Image 1 (cartoon, rainbow, N blue to C red):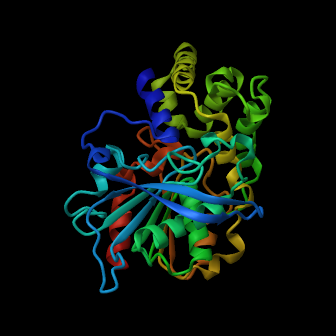
Image 2: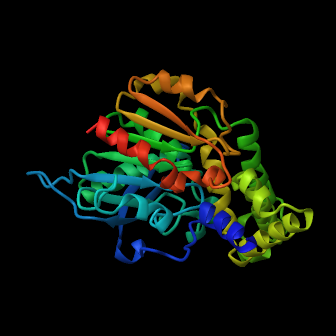
Image 3: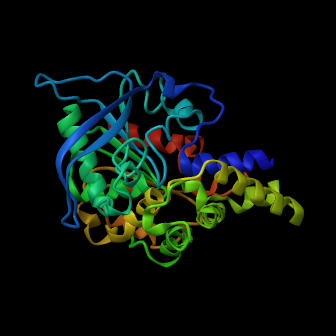
Length: 361
């Protein structure tokens, strides 16, 4: 049980692979595009940035060569384009007759700015990398699609956690570019309160580590204090209390599970600069004032066991009602759900997605 608990947390947050029923990464194509003269909302610029992305399925094109059947998947904080290309997600959605049947849709799953093999602080600029935010990340996605792939419109955006928030940014900054939005596991209010606090714990944990050296550390693994705070924080933010109680019903078992998770995170240390930027990028997010401008169909799904987005916070039902064509779904908590990470387990919401697509062809 300790191993299962630890792997669940690591897969949820970092996109590290697990034993696979279908090897989706093996059949995905990996690509990259260089975007010249990229301007950030801070006023900083870079001569170019790289956006890396994965694809599944076959593109269909119109007479002008533009792809017409694209669906973009957007991963969570600290993940990458492979985070949603694993059995718990793909086996439920990508097969024949399933909601994202690859015979019908062309799947595009980017490593978002600051993540994976896309441009990020650890490439060389370290803490001098431009301080990007979600608007910058969405602009990088937009330019990747339009300049790199010839995509002038999307059939749908499916976004989890950070990608969920990006979905709402997309709906407001590029209205109608995606015909449908499926945001999973987020809220539409400013990142404040406990949500910002847990992010700040991670940021401060790395910055205050004696080995941080202003972002010029030699080895990410040297930041033992920061890596431990990162792991401990994600145990709380990513776990399901019902599942954790069932798997660790005694004090001794709970301590063993915690230590096992920390050991596994420490065995795969994250880059502190990359992680600081990733968790700070949400600082300007606040789509609430413009939600009424999102006219496309929206299926917004949260789970009741989500530490980061607990039921009722921000009154998501009322927020959904303020959009012209949105439906909010709350997945009930149980010992089978996965806390915040329920977003990556379509078994709990696939039927809602299928109905959404049928109602909005």
